[in-house]
Image 1 (cartoon, one colour):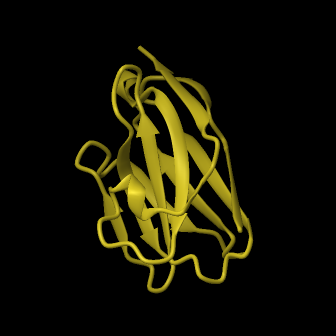
Image 2 (image 1 turned 180 degrees about the vertical axis):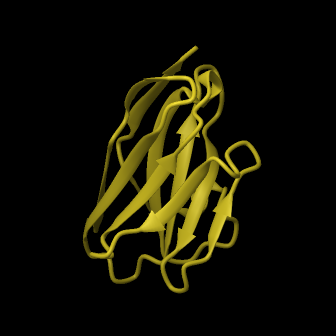
Length: 124
């Protein structure tokens, strides 16, 4: 079993930055993909970024491209989401997810393990 814990959420003003962390523990050897999803009020959860631990390739949704950066920590068990130039529409609950074999990195059902989420609130 893999456990994921997100941290780093909070409240910031528009234009500010936050760095989210996703710490993985447990049986992580088979985890190859880490995805970041968010659920905005009244909307479905969407995949916004993903990281392939086997080679370092990344994916970004158009809504965050150029502003968010996903990366893996030196200890390999933590994946970060650096969020810059935050906008009020980035307000959401942010979740990280882990999967071993993922074809569509934006598809929730391709991930086996989920964290509980961390709230990000951006005020104008």
